[in-house]
Image (cartoon, rainbow, N blue to C red; front, side, top):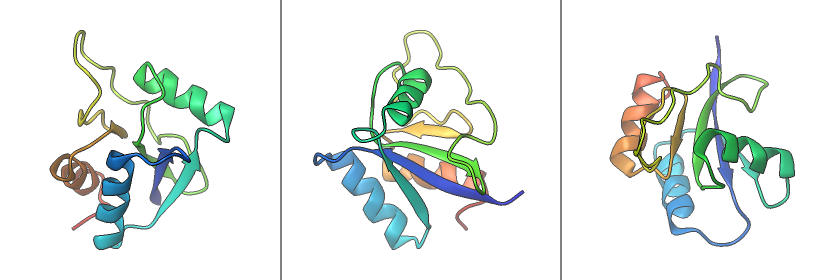
Length: 109
């Protein structure tokens, strides 16, 4: 299966989104960005995965899709989504968490 990265973001400036974009570009990881401010269905997806419209929410999808290739693991009770690797989805990751997420999914050496 061929995988790719999808970044759910916003039109307004978000420092976490900008940092994740810089990280992906520096590591030469190609990604598709979907703007949840312009795509209500995408915003609803993020809200369903995270509980609210948090960006960046980064997904590993099968080629040709913008959805996780497997359902993301649920968030443990009381755990916030920030930097929590849910298998195919990670939200507001630190660079270290994003690196580990991509490596585990075979998208970064």
